[in-house]
Image 1 (cartoon, rainbow, N blue to C red):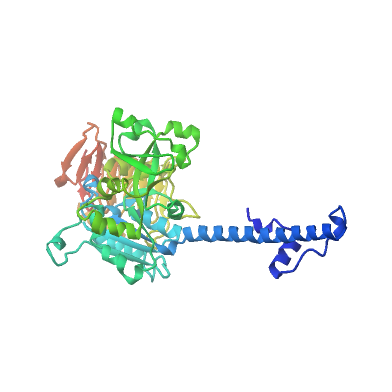
Image 2: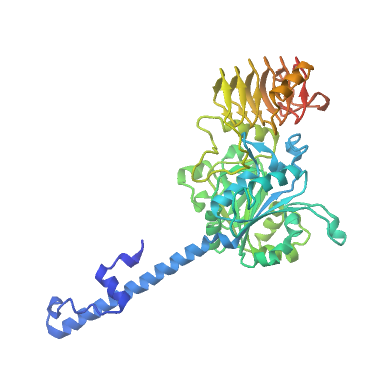
Length: 508
């Protein structure tokens, strides 16, 4: 409540102009006799004005502190996109993990980038290392100053792993902390002179978050490091790195994927972080999301002097630092998914087509941004579509689509049946003339040919799937490498490779 409006309007006005308010009340209004009583009244009113001014000043100072805590101009985000993405192979065979398409029209990097934009954070570094060509191309198209999202006085800079003089300068990024350390000189640059806090993000998570809520909590609690964490129940707790906190929310212990008695020892009272009592009983564990805030000076000291050889934030620097400095936990009680494996990628995409979806790209107030492609609406002819997402620029002809995600520029022929399938789309169109010539020569055009049945499958970009093909993995094979035939199987899910050709009549 703003205490400056608590006094009557006349009191507030007089307080502003320094006028005494004793005159409107005669001495007799006080009761009990004459001038002495009148002076008492005047003294009381003056005290009221002074108190109001003091309260107003206190509220003003509080508001200023809150505004300062939410000042996004003093925050820089560092998005880690340099991992090899081996668990997402073959989707990462020719692209960086943050460049993997998701949701039909987006790429994974669009998630942290959009969260930054929606949070008002316009200073962003993106660290890359493996297969970064398509990621760099996407970032330059979507987030530049000329035809993409405008960043005002901010910047978006891609920092690729590079060699520097000396033996240490010949190494690739060895981990999350080492990647930031190799570019720590940027925080001494003129562009970083006003930076107070560094936000460390991952390029392969799916979630929607206002980072400034996180930053405000970090600053108001006087934390040196803050860790964003999820409340977790017993069934999933042993799959995560867990943290233990005290009754102030300070992190005091870590345990990586504990089980049995070690797991029970990591139970905490999550009401300390704001979780309702009933939900806190169901979710007595907290897991790190891999999203951190460091005070800039603390970060540089840890990387340069305290732990100069440590390679990873989550497993090395932060657990060791918790014993020495103030490390706080911040609760994020909403949808979050680590898109680190083929199975999690597949399930996260299909969950977008559920009703209601656990996560949705449709939010007018906090939209997800991506590259502007200027594609036409999809053309759908005589088709049945159930619980699915159809991206723009697609051609669907007399087909049936069930619980699937169809990416941009996809072509699906007549009598095709897709079920539980994630189709990433295409990078370009083939003209009707080109398609006709390919078919006349017995070749396969981009898209899916007629009478084909596909289930439980990921179809990478520009794939050419012929007529009368069946992809169902009916034998339940869990792992297989069939590069020569254009597909892999991972966790029972068939992945048709990018630019591959699946011949007419093939049964997988």
